[in-house]
Length: 195
Image (cartoon, helix red, strand yellow):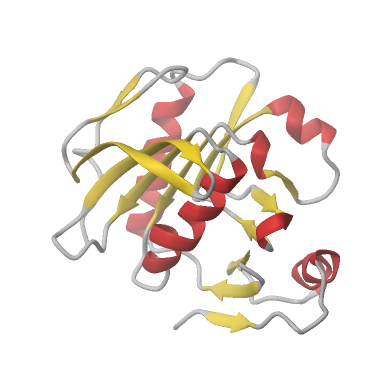
């Protein structure tokens, strides 16, 4: 199964895109996002993809403040880029969720995101989502690129300026990667399943 896309109609504004995203009947279990004005529908992630997300989530829960949460299905909205992404893993203060109505939070409130590429979305995660997350000022973006051309890699981006991140660290999958404060975590990737 491949991803489906729905184009942004001329004159369609952010509220119309969000209404389409919220009100359409999408295939059950699919991941529906708005990436630069395009509604994308992808099948549910693979078991290996979910296993990686779970390992990241469990590691983060050991180091985050008690009033923050780790979420795998939380939408992060960036209307200025016509984007509403659902990161594979997002860290957000719980107060933000309580303050926001609906199905998403402002991307600027997110403290950390991780994306785990699949064969269908690797380019979105590497380029469009990276630019959107940087533009929102999300401090840290962890890209777990299981489909990198030279083999699986893990890249930690930070210090966003405009829509560009600086590479803070990069390694091959299976090697540890250090997340800086406020996480201060050596993320062990040796248990990440390989496809």
